[in-house]
Amino acid sequence: MDTPEDPGHAAVRAALGYARLARGTADVPIGAVVFGPDGVELAGAHNAREALADPTAHAEILAIRAAAREYGDGWRLDGCTLAVTVEPCTMCAGALVLARVSRVVFGAWEPRTGAVGSLWDVVRDRRLNHRPEVRGGVLADECAALLEEFFAGRRNPTEE
Image 1: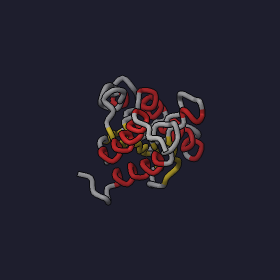
Image 2: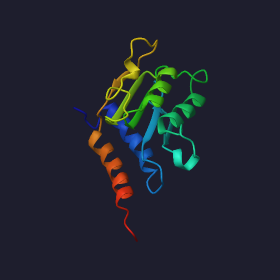
Image 3: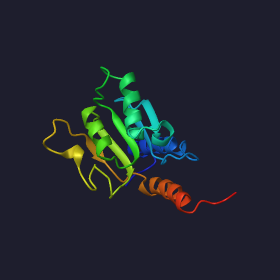
């Protein structure tokens, strides 16, 4: 069970902070943060597909790109942890494997598109030369509530 002192708990809370920055925009509020081996935040982001008109502008991709500029040899994130509010999709799971992220911690499971254990399990495919440690379901209810709020507003927009 997660406790407030749990590092996974704190990491997903940080990702939730980035996700909340997307509130009021057309982008789905998903946040991601990359932490260095020492636990210091290297980079964080929220989804920006709509804002950037870029189908690859998922929170994980944006955070990985920024963290790679700050750490390591320009692309390897050995020893780093990626925390994200929702289970990564296939694109993001592939990117974190290729970036050599050591640990992935995420909040809500995504049974329709999740690629870290739900629909697919890209990150633990034994055919790959890198397989990060995975921990899912951390603060899942809080992460799912943020998404439910967003999509409820899209289905039933209130007029003000």
